[in-house]
Every structure is written in structure tokens, then in C-alpha cells.
Image (cartoon, rainbow over all chains, first blue to last red; front, side):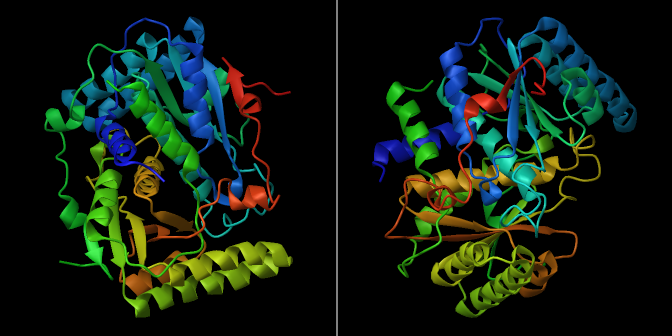
Length: 213
Length: 213
């Protein structure tokens, strides 16, 4: 059981957590990284398959390559967006990949646990969702450790496989930047920039069946 | 910034959280449900798209139908597993759906935010991963509230769409049972039952590139 203080601490972390794009060069202590990854590893997973791996990239050379892959995709996306604003936001993320002292590629191995993972047969995407739960644990742990974290999800997966030598059947689902920051915003950057509003929770909740209004 | 106590509370919740399958009939106070859903709504989402909805099912009749859909799938899966053990674990989940006073269907709307959600174009699954982050927030919040939560992921999505009148383009990603329990185990049930071991974290971490050993 948890005390009210513990419960409130939990909510405080959930509400404070932000996607960060600017990092200081200061290194992250190894024990913090270990605690964050152990938190990830204690996420739920379908059939207890634990499909995740973590490739810790501290090499400047490899980080440059990852940033190159994301920047290539940013430029390709910019052609579709046809507006400077979108490209600006995505550009911030690419810079973050170079600035942060550590990049973690989080992968999902759909073959982990064999051909018939308990409960995964009906909805195969549950392996990816398990990995996302691990990333959310990482994020909350990082936040509670006073660290900043950013999630980059624009790249061609095969570019990342090539750069990090990841097997073809393994999914590189996220590039995570971790480090310290001198700017931890109160609200999501996309909310502050009026790119998108936070929706009203009441409108997202239905009782007993979908409301088509 | 967080105190050490707050950080430790965060980790305590992460390590305590379990997938629960047996529930007491006691109702869950509305303010707790609201706090849990608000925590879910404060999960990260790609391009701030907030793709989630929550269908709160308290009607006994509709809960029976959901349990029927899961049980139908359990019986179909049992034919593939050809062993009683797997069917037993999945059976527990079906019972949980009937026992828990509240079932929440968490959905993902891939069309939320329009055709070009910022950052989602490269990896479309990021909408599902955002929804999984919301579910993980729910889970941690529920745990810190002294509540039990179970995630059922075996059913045909169209059965759930039919029962809850969910539009065809919306993905019913999870059936979540929430309630109180008198048995909150220390370890995952599948670990205790020696169905699957917890992997060693060290073997899941690589430095700078994938290690093919």
C-alpha cells in the first residue's frame, strides 16, 4: 500500500514529465542510467515476453549518424508539410540527438518468447505496446531523477538497423535522448506553440458504449 | 525537481505494479477513476495527438458480453496451445473481466489530429505506442491508489467494436479491469508459475551497437 505522499509523488512525476529537445553536455551518472533501465525492464509485457533491448549510444560518431538519419527524414517530411513550422519542431529534435550525452535506441523483438506468446496471438501489436510501456517507465524514472528525455520517432527503421547493426526482424521503435537540461517546460512545447490543444478529458470518456455525438 | 523521497515513491510504484486477475465486488470511488484517467490523458503522444478514448463499462450486461468475446477467443487460442496451462491463465483473465466492478476499453483513433500528425508519418505505430503510454500511466496511478488493474488483450477487435458500438476506424487496444483485490502478488503470476523467467537486464543492454553473441 502507498501513503498519500507516495501517491502524490507519483502524480507529480506523471504531470511534470515533458518531451525535452535541448540538452546540456554534462554526462549522466551511470547509476541513474541503470535505475532508469531497470524501471523500463519492470514494465508489463504481454505473456511476460520482455521484448525490449536497449542500445546505449555514447559514441559521438554513431550519434552523428543517428542524427543524420533523423535529419534526412526531417527533410523528406518537410516536403510533405510544406510549412516551416513543422520542420522547425522536428529540427529541434534532431539537434537534441546530437546535444544529449546519451542516446538510447529502444527495440522490440517480436520473436522473443517463441511463436506462441501467451495472449499475444490475438493482437500482435501488444509486443510494441509492451515496449511503449517500458519507454514510459523510463521517462517517468528519468523525470524523477532530474533528467531530461526526448523521444525521436522520425527515421527509416532500416537506416537505424544499418547504423546500429540491428537484426532485420528487430524493430528499432524509439531513439531516446537523455541528459540534463536548463529548460524543463511546464507545458508540452506543441501546446505552448499552439500547434495542438490539450483535449478536454470529459470529451474522451464514454459510458458503457461509444457516443457518436 | 524531486526529492529523494518522491523519486523513491515513483520507483516503489513501478516495482509494485502487477497485472491482477481477481477482484472484489467493492465499487471504485469516482474521484479515483477520474484521477487515473487524468493521469492517462497526461501521457506523451506523438505530435500531441492524444489518440485515446476511454469507454467505461459498468453495466453488468455489457461486461458479460465483453467476457463472452474474450472467452470465445480463449477457447480458440486453447486449440492452438494444446495445453491446459495456457488456457488456465487466459481463463483467469476472463473471470477478472466479470468480477471487476469496472471495465475500461481503451481505444486509439489513428485519424485524430488529421492526416499529417507531426512526427507520426515515419512510424505510424506511434499512435498505438502513445496509447500504451497512457495505459501505463493508468496502471501506475491505479497502483498508487491502492487499486488493482488487469489488461486483457485477447479478443477479436470487431467483437469489441460491435459490443461497444465503436467506429470501424478506431482500434479497441485494451480491455482494462479495475477494482480492489485481496491478493496483490509480489511477482508477476507468470514468473511465479514458472511460465517465463525475468530476463537479466545486463543481457538486454548493448553499447553503441547490437551485440550478436
